Length: 437
Image (cartoon, rainbow, N blue to C red; front, side, top):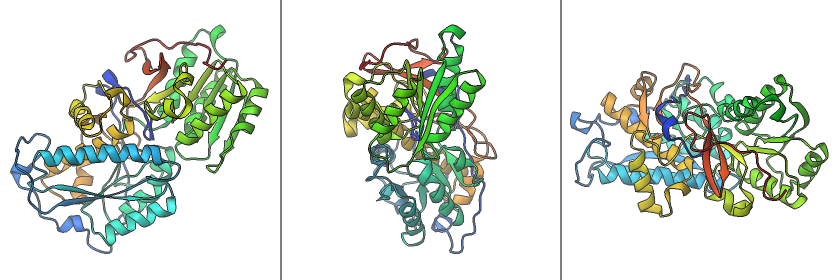
């Protein structure tokens, strides 16, 4: 989440029935000027029998030349939790596809390198993966912040850029023809679903004042800004807003100022670590608004209760793009393969893992449909029609804006539950005092 829960995007969990309804999308308009021939372009095309590893039942181990996929992930630094979740999703897909005989008898081999959550390092990593390692394909990193420079490198060399967690507005403003965001909706949808819920309340039950602490990040801040614009248009007064740098480690001053402003609702445009920091400071200063929403961080079913304390999560809202019980294409295959590989329970799976797995599924489908390993043909194919994945049936418009929507989730009784819109809700949202109130 980034979406999301989900989200994500980095983002979230929980989708269930919504997955079949929403259609996520992202396009990238391209600036490819490959000076050296793309390694993928020289790779032999798959045979007809190769079509889809997804549908293949061949048990034989793949023996052909490996299909090497380069990925830069944040295994250290601010995004390391979500980067690790993405790594698990990619590795789950690698295991699944190779267990089925690979693609066209060729095993999939991931080459994952650490970008330390740095935009400079992610640029270097993709440059090296493409020009030195000559990987066949690349998949995206975690976060909009890193996706933007990474996608530009991929576009320069004519590579398709299938990515799981870069859905901020600035990603799509690049107009890159090679980028495909594998979530149902752009990240601003995460904020809109919360605004829709709040503004659905009777006027005398809505918040009157709001606060917006926002990380200086192309994923996080736009989500809070989307909510602020809708709230202000509805008459909800902004009493506090602050954009803080990624280096912020002490959130006490921010929370102290919010407490003094005494807003009814706090809409936090966050990634993970800052979300944890804000909750801890709120608990410490006993600041408990009536409603509390986080763009990201609170939608991690495993990390959030671990980092802020399981007793401090109930009542908090976030957004999601996926749920482990979704009936979407190959979702249950993903859930079972993930649990077999990493253990735990289905409701502990970070949605970022599902988003990464879906990137692999999408590539499989594109190779099967085009009968080719050529990046150019795959890019053009993905711009046509609708593509089934565990994230739902996805398509992308010309500017890369996804066509679907996310859903609102809330921590209730120690679990993250989808609560809005009503058509996909497993429970009703509740306005309840935060645990530290």
